Image (cartoon, rainbow, N blue to C red; front, side):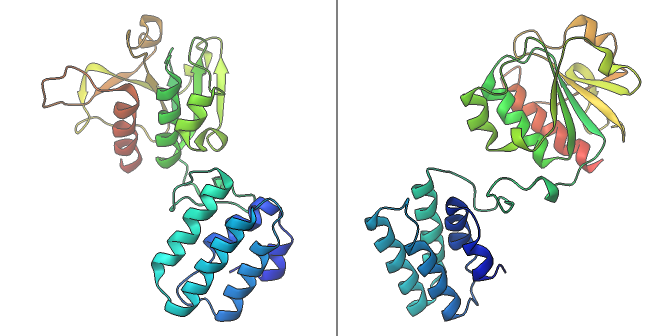
Length: 244
């Protein structure tokens, strides 16, 4: 647990994050009061927010009800204008902690995936399932767009990525495509070191890229719909690959 002195040395917004997330069930009374004291000195908070924080800290001191801890965290998110998930691992600056990731030699090649929403969702799954790098072929949607950044929930800042002009990155490693007409995902032999190609939402994997693939994997479906959203399909595949 960070010391009060350490917290006081952090940037103001990070201070609030720590003061709202460091409370645990066995926090002693002095530590809780000290956290409340730090919050009360934050200039960017309104007097109304400071009063609400103080009231919640005092209620927790009195009742030790864990729901008050969640209330404090939620109030901090509102004050910061953020929506980080409760389970995210953050670094000292309040960003996703890339050092906590487990990484394998699993890369993605996005072949003209257009939608920023889908790209952001793919980054989020890639962050969770061990991807070491994402290559985006020219023609993909903008990684830096607000829609992509919002959907990725910070994963764009954690997963290394490169926009590439040609297909040279696909040479020298095992390459396979997530595409229809391939081996069932339950039977597919995932490589320990490889690149999975993800095609566009409308056209699938381009013929020139498919020609460089050593194989393809497909996801069985059991409904009336003929296809899955590209980001959903990528998440299913990445989970299977991470466990292989």
